[in-house]
Length: 118
View 1 (spheres, one colour):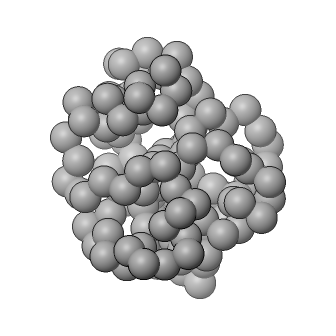
View 2 (tube, one colour):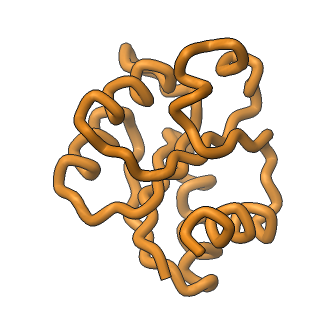
């Protein structure tokens, strides 16, 4: 079991992922904006971050990835995005464990988490 932080501005998607990950035996925290994601990570205890790449605010996904790493968080980050090309060939691409294209089937997401946390 892992403690997973799901970060996305889409409440429906966060709710769906939370219920499916919990059904898979994981503890799930949620963040609906980039700043909340930073706060949750600062509180500690997160094993894996699953995040969207686009947030409708000043701190976009690329900046959020840089900020997470600058905080000293070396936990695995799985990026879920409908626009994964925004990450390709960017320095932040090397800072994430996996990039998955939305919509992501829940079994694939559970498999990705299992492969990362064992």
